[in-house]
Length: 406
Image (tube, rainbow, N blue to C red):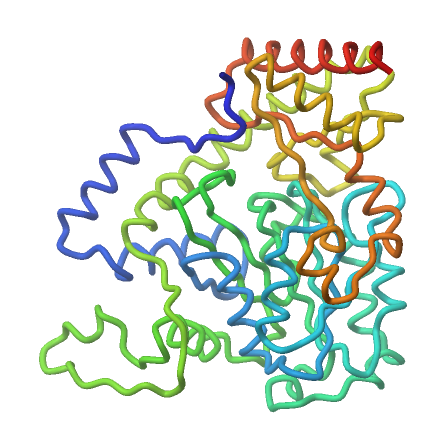
């Protein structure tokens, strides 16, 4: 069986995790702080905060930005449920917009049309690690006419004076937009380090902060880390200092900090990300594209557009002219050939939780058309060239069988 996306685990990671375990410090500590520092250096962000998940980080940033009941946050209809869930958890309304006619990412024109006096943020999603059109999104949040609609509900919103651009780049670590690494492009950028991501910490995530210079990023960092530890104003490492046991809880916070065990994995992965991980994933994607070049039904993804380049997180193959049922039949046939594939994603309005809130799939036709014939193929560092050839063979055979059946 060729799996879909197992993590890269080798002796180097085992050794570093063992060092963390034997160091006497396994929760949030020096390794987590070092990981945050190195992420900032890699991305060019002004400050980075690590969390137990990217989802937790996005929610805390929304709360730091004072988003709550009565507010609206613009998100794509084509994304994983986490993007919408965090908005709902804050008591705000997710305002969904459709994809671009020729891609998976949010259509900036639709986002612009969705802005109201209640809009407090836009959360674009870099699907498969391909950067959104950030220039167009910045034009929206900086538009003087749209900013006349903006009504701040707290001192942080007032200090920014406009909607926030908070990117969900769970797939995008290492991607570049016009020569700049994601993490330094939006006001805030969330990365996921889940087990299937390019860079993993088993579970975990980070928020890169890149607000205007007049913001106190150190103060924002302090608030976010405090709120990730139940609102306690001292973490465990600080409390170990001589006589420093006393602490306060400044607000009822959450428990979503990253541990040093996780950071130990992340530091290894980050250290070899540009030299090993991205080059190999790039090679694998190009091998897939070359193999499918002679098949008219195969719509292969783009990886470079001008100065922007994806993180090569997913290989999203689309089957030209296939219906949703036909695509599902192809997936079943691929599975019979011992290859695991996936679909990214089921659009939010198709899911029960959002249908029950009144969202309708017919309002997002491009999102539906992207979904109906998409198949994500296996893509991970340890995937061999021979396995890629086997995946391609399985896909071609499955497509031909389903086509003949029709």
